[in-house]
Amino acid sequence: MDLPVQTQLKVLLMKTLRDERMTRAELARRLDWHREQVDRLFRLNHASRLDQIEAAFKVLGRRISVELHATG
Image (tube, rainbow, N blue to C red; front, side):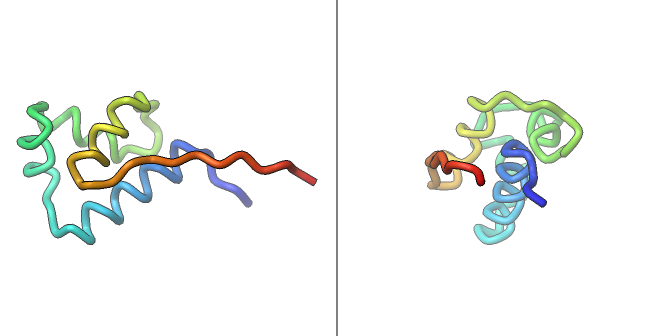
């Protein structure tokens, strides 16, 4: 079963944050966002904006790359 793209991005964001040993509070400081804004990025049932997810990855020294594959 394939996960929705946004869910995949959020899981990767969680993993990257952990790998970088950064807290959500530190991510909020570096983004100059309120902590609640950052917390929403990690809620799987919240429809986060792609630009916000990209900004979080950028702070973590990552960028998003997209590939399109044919089905079937």
